[in-house]
View 1 (cartoon, rainbow, N blue to C red):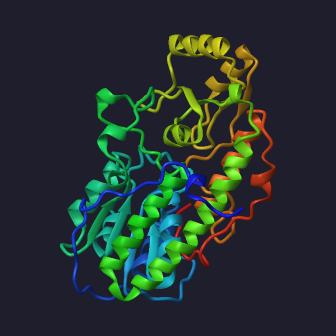
View 2 (tube, rainbow, N blue to C red):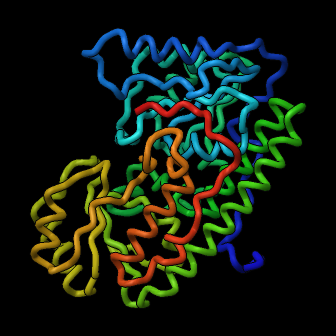
Length: 364
């Protein structure tokens, strides 16, 4: 299919001039900086595995730039745009609750050496952001991708993210149009930081855009097979609010409270009543947030309980083709389409695409 302007829902124009600090000449950063975190992590088996960043899989290279990222989807998006022009090191381990993740003090070394730090923002990684602000160099750059992508009047609040706490739903990356806005911000930021690489960043962004458009077409074709009355989402952790608006779904509920604990018995009873009244066909759990409450709700309502959606835990292992933001979207939306009574064939046939080889470091 030839891409058209209407094929991609709600194209975004990233906001400009926020949370960026122009930099000038920066010293070369050797791969040993990233490697030191791996050595520290291996030195004490009693330390939690989620405490340390991971070394890039390309251990032999050195780079003029060191880029720090937080959650794995952002690391993957950044890697597609940046390619091999920089060392990219993730901070938040996959499968970890990124909302409550507390980086160990040793992460400060990475943040102090990083030339650019890409975080999601929207109050997702506050401990990591605070550590970055306390340790980053005066000439480095901190970019909050979500804050640069949407305006406050576009923030979404719900049961898991109540407005009175001032923490909007931060999960923009599950909507391909917003993920592409992230990629555009990465392109523009890196072109400012590394003007010599501007053409390469632009070419990588264009290639990634073509990949995302193909993904979007496969998604829309699959979603068109879902009965309209089934396009209702009840999730444990609401990671799909922005996606739902752009792709014609309705989020009827999110089970997990704002404190990331379990809902009260009364809240569970209210949800059961809502599910029975609205005929929600499937209840979606999360690999990051397993919950026995979902089994109870599914058993009492007769709904299908699906516990394999991933919020920011990429499928496969680092180095696998499917271990990417694109692979994550494909896997999640195959699962969602099938559970809601649709035919995911176009997504199953879609071949995971990307730009080059992903050499970023993904902590596990």
